[in-house]
Amino acid sequence: MDTRRTDRLLLLVLLVLLARQAWLASFIHPYADDLNYAAVGMEGPLAERLVVEYRTWNGRWSTNPAVLRGPLTWAPAPSLGWYRAMPVFFILLTICSAFFLLRTMLKDATDSTRMWLGALGFTSIYLNLMPHLGQGIHWYTGAVTYQAASALMLVHVAAVIRMRRATRRRSLWTALGIATLLFIAGANEVSMMLVVAFHTLLILMGWRSGARAHALSVALLSIAVLAGAMMAAAPGNAVREAHFPARHDPFLTGVWSTLQTGRFGSAWVFSPIMLVATLLVMPAIRDLASRSRDLASLLAIPVRHWSLITFGMLFLVMALPYWTTGLLGQHRTVNVALFFFVPLWLLTVGALDAQVVQCRGWRLPLSRAWGRRVLLMLAIALLSYAGNDRRVTDDLFSGRAVRYDMRMRERYALIREGMARGAEQVVVPALYDVPLSLAPLDAGPDPGHWMNRGLAAWLGDRDLRIVVAGE
Image (tube, rainbow, N blue to C red; front, side, top):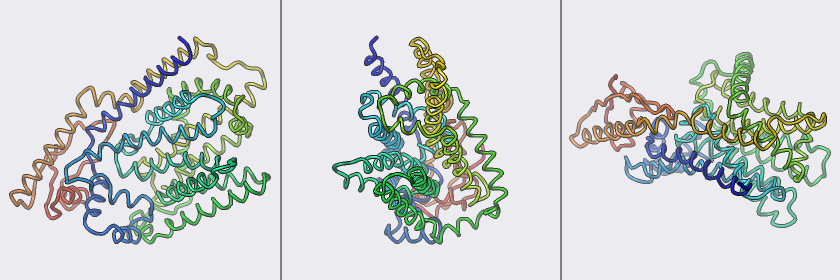
């Protein structure tokens, strides 16, 4: 089989495997913040609510409009068509952003098919290893706040590269770079910190470069800092942090962030899919570096620097929630760390190969054609039935996702029936046997709990008391 046909077959296989995420999305339901943001977003003018959010909860000025006017507000409840399309959108955004960055760096080094393979492969590995798939992709509030910013960070990096080397259309790339920078810096605290760190690192690494590049880096860093300061200065941050008495503890932050860095870093590096991907990518990086000046210059950065960047990024992402709340909390921030850990780790390994393995004349493991075929088949097997993909496959083919959808629809019917007869309180059964890949949160027995009130408000009766009975 020729190389082009093999690449196209691999593209098809990866697309089929990723299609399971779209299938799973056809059974998802909103919960927690999705319901509350939709309920308050439908109540009054958007501008007024944004001011309230800024003063009382958070300063995420670029993503708050998206959660307050999200897909749950686009049609009468409980319509879910637009909501269920969102995971597909975020996956496509991730793939296309990765392709855009690869095309920017490797335009003259390889063909588009292999760039798409790289983008699909990266997305597949990321979804497979994601600590919480539900919060990362299938829960709209988490995805639009964190995943969208992560994907656009790839677009931003590509725009910065094009800005620096453009001889024409510089204004276009500058506009794209600034627009994505503003969105990222106002999306969430983790993304804001990372984009500031990225531009700081550019200045440090290019300190001895030409004045134009240095001035551009300083300008972008200034914009990032100012945009991030607008979010950090929000009075609502203090209100939110007041719920966490263990915040701002330097000892706790340092110890637990270090432990979590070791925990997740080692888990990802030694995961089967990452080990296989590393062995597959090493010869590809070596080949591409011989034809790409951008990639070759990256691989010339000392391995110790790449190691510091990779695990330093992971530490910073872990440290932020510990500093602000005293606990790691939900895994949405860890999902962000994984998103950038995967490419940074592969660049670290590529630098190790360029600076040590090649210099000493060592051969890459399984570098022959038969070895690569074995690794490819193993990678496909792992992406079919390991990690999150195993849970997705089980949820779909065991009928667990279908049963979850049916129970949620029955719950909506019970609530709307109670609303129709003017009931003050409706009792609905608790969820059980929920999809393992989604791990959704359920409302509880307290009708005054914010999740219960959010469900009632979204369905159209804020005063209705919803009680979720025990199993």
